[in-house]
Image 1 (cartoon, one colour):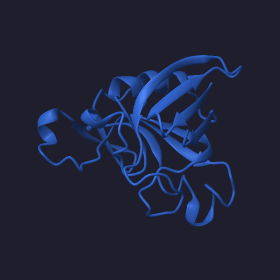
Image 2 (spheres, rainbow, N blue to C red):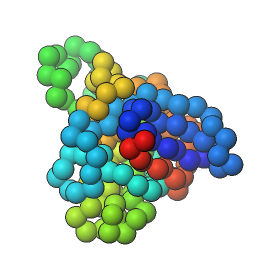
Image 3 (cartoon, rainbow, N blue to C red):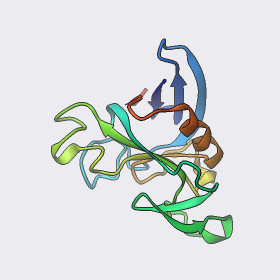
Image 4 (cartoon, rainbow, N blue to C red):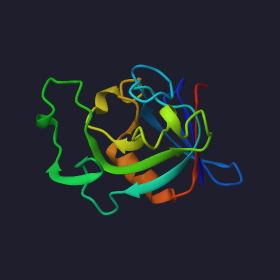
Length: 160
């Protein structure tokens, strides 16, 4: 399997290795646009792999901080009116860039930037660029994706 993420469409597309389309999901990428630099809060472009899968078997809406379960289960009353909160929920697919000098190593390293595909508390803004750099998904969708994808599978993030 492999993934193609479209910034313009705000969609994540899943394909079999023979490039046959499997499914698509609505996502949210960075509010600040695309970019590779550390501290930019942008979504990085280019070729990546899934470096790690985190959260197998975790409860729906389980919160992660620094890739560790906190023991908290998110519910809508926890977010209040602070739309800037960016909870990492349910599952994490941690990405690693493959293009040295562009999205791997140095000041542009996707993995060192902790760029994930993950479940979100900000369900109202899926389909809009609102994240802090990661690719946000509906929590039910991230479970579906997590179960289809393996460590080492390719992820292409592009603007089209």
